[in-house]
Image (cartoon, rainbow, N blue to C red; front, top):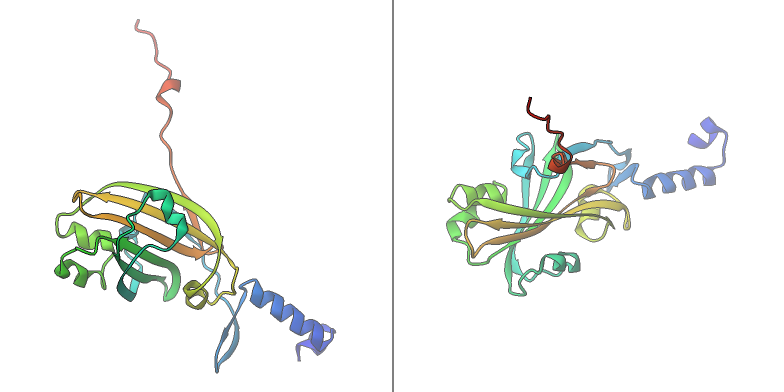
Length: 206
């Protein structure tokens, strides 16, 4: 018994386990027990799209037609029309580390839609000569709610890192909106900024 091993009461052990579970350090699997959650942190560059993650696996959750309901995406002024929504889980080393919900025009050709189940949306579009032109990003912290709790085995309110994006493509009728989420302790983002040309030192001519 843990209480005997550590010289504390069973109540103290229960409280400690509850705190560890609330903090995301433990995960409970129905019918199997409670386990220490594997800790893994992935570094991603903000300006590198997910298609560059060659070692990642994709699991399609659903492809539906719906309106954008996440109020945070309003910063990008998305259309109020019904859009195509592609939801996926991205795995690394057989562990989920990203949840992605992508919205784009519902008028996309059916042949392209069929490819969304096995590819990133931008990769599928690129194969049909629809290319990424610009990408706008918003990075924010937000509490876990809904589907991500089950995907990552975390409690309600667990801190998440969210990357919201708007992608303009070479097709004026196709603009992509979406949200990528991961527990804050699993994902870190980096960016390299060019130097300011105003501060460049120019040697005088001799």
